[in-house]
Length: 85
Image (tube, rainbow, N blue to C red; front, side, top):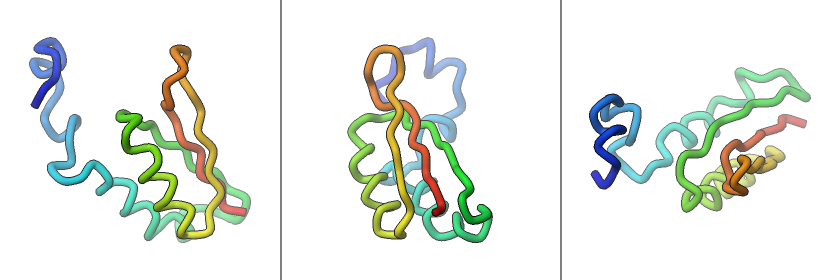
């Protein structure tokens, strides 16, 4: 894994990767989100890799949920809001 040593030394591997395509967490929530949110509810999740953002948005768009990306102070996508309308 190509991460700085200060991250590798303090974070458990499970916190850094899903061991797959990086979408395991998001795929799970696509399947259950309408069961755990009330209509008009909102779910926010942090995005750690801007390369995955388009894939994550596609997953949720296919489930007829509304999404919005929020950037951090450096202008990088950091949080995705998923809205059950």
